[in-house]
Length: 241
Length: 221
Image (cartoon, rainbow over all chains, first blue to last red; front, side):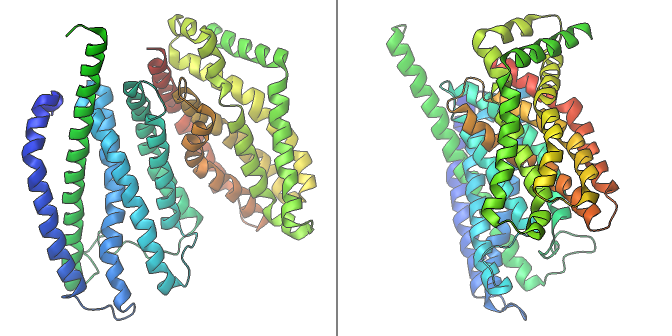
């Protein structure tokens, strides 16, 4: 990990990985969509609307995954003063926020036919909404300072405070209200979902993950390049080059 | 300990001599609550139903109102740098300022609560639980809020940013604070809720000063 604290070394690796992750994302999405839309049965209760799940559930997983990546990167950035980790935390936040929005919107489209309402104040929906605000707070904070490095450091503290709080918020919101179905994929005694639906679901989850890696790499490369441009400009202004 | 108390005393003295802040917070608290009867109508039943929630939300907003200035004035006039170089660790400085913040905002809110309980027709059974819940919950609000207050030092539009950072983190306190009162009014014991509120306070008490001090160090770099 520390080997890639050197931005140049990281850039070399990222340049190699970017096209691979993009290709993987396209392949997995194509395969996942084919299984999800064509080669999987409609649900016996929910009918065709169950297909929303293949976008909704992976997006929900990613919304949490991105937050964890963000917090871990922020922690690494704080502990080892790892410059690339700081950039990863910053790049992860908007992607995670986007996944959260996708989860909420696709959930609304699913909720309307199933529950008869776009929105209900159910525990999981509420926790997801709060997660969105945690993302937005982080993004607002890192952009609120004139010095970008200071924004990243402040953001790191917030991300770490947030990661302690996410389980507490989750627990309290669960306590507060529960209507959403309990977890059906990851639980004791194996998944209760049929294999024909599990395959497209997992394919889509992997596709989302590959896409995330691709976007993350692109954003991190852009961020590091922007930093270099900033440094060059400063050097030009001060005339030390 | 003496140094710790010296900072608490200093902040209290500043608050008392400037006088306005605590009063403003209480006024804001009372006024926000008074708006609700105008918004939802004066029926006693509706007011009694929403009273715990309204009082809690207003208390939450009021305690946030004064957070922005928790470290900002010291940051701007340079006192924070002196405090950071003082022999007392910065964590304890943060803790002292949090204690002072609670004494100047949380406590006055608590004192104003009986008035609001009457105005909003709160069920008499719920009153003491509401007081207990506020007593356990408002220190947690000050502790969490201090992290936000330290993070926004030197930021643009700090006040608005602070609310965006802090309000999502306040939600658990709100849920269990209101839950305790609703439970008692509904005829159930409130012990569980109060214990969880106490638990959150016990967790926030050691952790929040660390996070706040880490944020302060960055601001001073």
